Image (cartoon, rainbow, N blue to C red; front, side):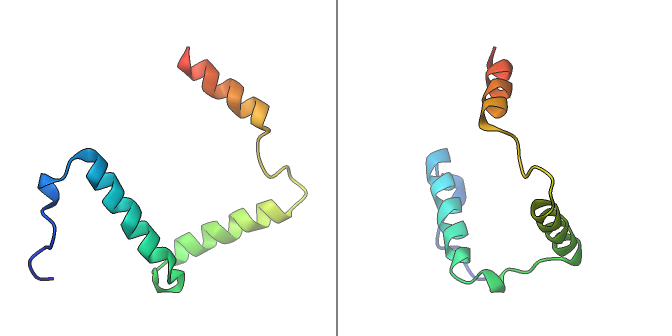
Length: 73
């Protein structure tokens, strides 16, 4: 890597977050180019298996909302 085009230290928080978002979006173009470890593959497989099983795939919105509201009090 050469000289950075952006001096990250001079960016404010909003600019840094925007840069992060742009970087993530640039990776979405070619997801196969993003390396993934064997451990990550196993975890993704485990989650897919659980999703495809008869188990409930998530938590109802009402329960999530109540949990969040409880933390805000």
